[in-house]
Amino acid sequence: MQDRSISIGKSKGVPLRLDIGPRDIENDSAFAAISTGGKRPLPLTNIVEECRNVLIEIADELRLEQVLTLKM
Image: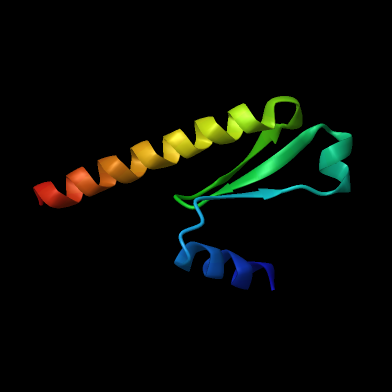
């Protein structure tokens, strides 16, 4: 079921999804699932700033992908 929600999220344009479970809270982290691929831990202590940084990275990657596509 989780894979289905990921594909639905991608089709709706969800660039970043945070997975936070009880163990993550104990470890003071969340996992960021990134639409351009990959998953990585983010510290909960400054989660807003970390999410901003990831969103900037995603936007930069998508812009670069668009430029490369237009050059072809």
